[in-house]
Image 1: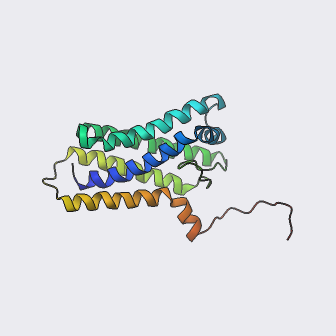
Image 2 (image 1 turned 90 degrees about the vertical axis):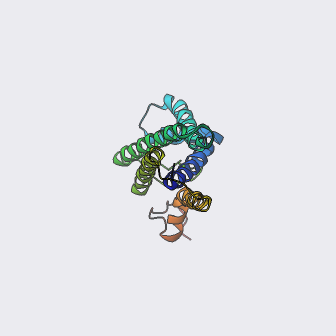
Length: 186
């Protein structure tokens, strides 16, 4: 294990742990969001929502459990995280190509519509999963406690930034979607 694994693991465990928890807390909202994608039959949305939410939590847990169970746990967690991120990116591309203005249910109740930034985010997270998994198989020598702590802290900060990405984009760039016409002219 190296600093790369700690950094990538902190990011992915934070992002997937938060996202999975938000989806498990409100499974109906996530199932409704999946239905709005128009990618799978409506009757499969609740089961799909549950599987995806628990898979996110499983990936986060496997990455974190490597401290107890060793590198195989982290490698499995990174592999599952990478598969989830690629699958999510593919679904977002399909939704965007279909012209649906579906909201991003990535972290619970946030409602920013899907855009290219969500595809890019998920592909970058998939790359981090690959880097984390690879670094679990490489030997980097002794690791210092200070640099290990720095890698974990930096990963936690990046995880928070990923989680609030839509809010940050809206704050600094603004929402480019036209406002709905409510009929009020004042």
